[in-house]
Length: 119
Length: 112
Image 1 (cartoon, rainbow over the protein chains, first blue to last red):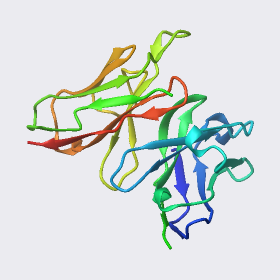
Image 2: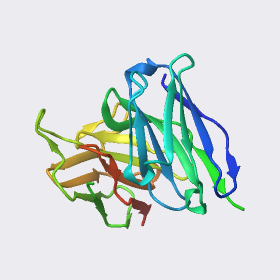
Image 3: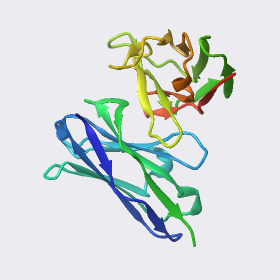
Image 4: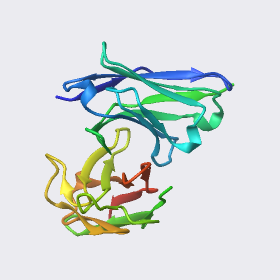
């Protein structure tokens, strides 16, 4: 069965960077895009971007351009999302999600990683 | 970017009754190559990640009960829960994936 297991919660100071990992299993890692979506406390879902693990191609929401980097390591079936220049507005649960092939909906989701930005 | 607007923000429905959630996109999400609408619906329960219910506007994901149905085309879409069950209490989101994905603001469904 498809599983996406994310790294643990993080506490960061403003201005720092955070990297969240997502270990995939139960499917061919290179066969499906990986998406990243975040959810601030009590708020809705916000799509951040996707990576094609097969090619390394990425697409980021304009809001995060220049501040986010998504990567994939096919040797360990893991995707990473690094967000830099953190502010308190980046406090959120970050989800990885697997698409279906190159379609841009999210069929399977990780459990989420809480990132707290606080001085 | 395509803006997704859901209504209502919340609704309370009696057990066994119908719940209807609306979603409107700022431009058509009909994909001409396959004549399908790039619209999905997700359910999110407290403390859990979202769960895909519907894609292509009306195709139920495997394992999703048939009381959930999606309809609509172009810019106007609806998620219907035909007979609300206690386990359906959740927040529901629509998402367009025609181009850069975007979500609606969510609709909270509660028991009346």
